[in-house]
Structures are given as structure tokens and as C-alpha cells.
Length: 233
Image 1 (tube, helix red, strand yellow):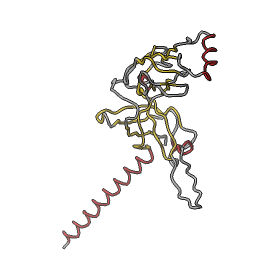
Image 2 (cartoon, helix red, strand yellow):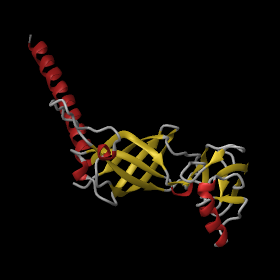
Image 3 (cartoon, one colour):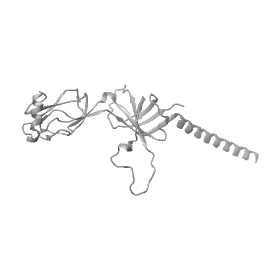
Image 4 (tube, one colour):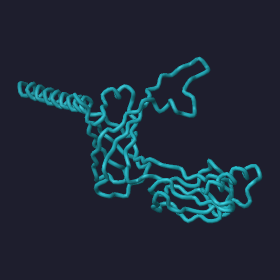
């Protein structure tokens, strides 16, 4: 009988120790780190857009190609432009920035072509997206942190993270920027309800994490990541 009681006590003590250990582990993790899977690789991008209206007569780039700032990308024929834009073209011609019959399209920055959305023979006009160039030499992680935790995050804090495409690699970075508005602030769809009902939703604030791709892995914008920020005590 005494042996059974002793055994029960040992079992209870063992479970208590295990439970306390689990509690302390999660408490420590919550106090020292902020984690999220809502993160991805990002890059600064620039849209390539024509300055005048006209047909694309040549387009010399493909997605994935590296280009340099000022590099020739294609030509635009302006000989068939409408009379409404003729004055603009004449003005450009007088300043020497374009020819009356052709316009050269060049890369605004150095980087990788991550999107090419035009073909030869297609008409193009100012404001239209012909291509998107990403500065992949300065990739960063964009992570969305819950508003209830953002007060713990400080610029310069160390970040450990993994990328789903390369699960065996662990990266280190630093918090570079903390967003000054929630993601929903810039959402096209309004979060405000006109029906009179309201459901409180925890808002997310973007955090920019800078890192160095020292292993020269083939990282591309949009890859999923999981981060852990080392927050101050």
C-alpha cells in the first residue's frame, strides 16, 4: 500500500515538473521573442513605363534577366500617335529627349526583371506597366506583427528567421523599420461597417527586417518566411 502511495506521489510530482517546465518554456519564449509566420522576402521595385503613346516596335528583355540602370529595353514607334498627343511629342523632341518617330525605353534602376507584361506590336501609353524591376541586391523580410506585440519591437533588434524554400538554412537580420500605420489603413476594401455591427480584429503592423544573403541563395520576392525577433527584457 505504501509503495502504491509512493508511486502515485512520484507520478504527480513528475507531471507537475513537466507541466511547470512547459509553462516556463512558453513564458520564456513569449517574454524574450516575438514570432510570426506572416512574413515574406521582399524587394524594392520600380515600374517601367513609357513616356509617350505609341506602338512597341521592339522589346528586348525577358523575365529573370538582370539589367543595369539606363540599359536599353526597347523601342516605341511614335509615328502613329494621335493628334491629341502630338504637342507633347513635339515638345519632347525639341528638348532632345526623344525622336519624333521613335522613343527609347530604358531601365530606371539596376536589378532583375520580375515581370514583363508587354509584347512587340502592342500599343503602350504613359502610366502603363511594361515591366517591373526588383533590386534583388538589397532583399529584406517584410513581417506583419500584431498590434498587441508591436510595442516590444525596437529598431536594431536581432531577428532569426527561416525561409520555406530553404528550410535547412537559418538567417540573421536586424529590424530596420517599423510601420507607422496598420496594413488595413491602406487596404482598398474599407474595414468600417455601415450595418451598425462591429467585430474587433487585431490589426497588423509591417516591420522591415534587413539581412545579408551571404550564402548567395536564389531568393526571390514573395518567398514565405518564419521570423523570431529577440526583444529586449
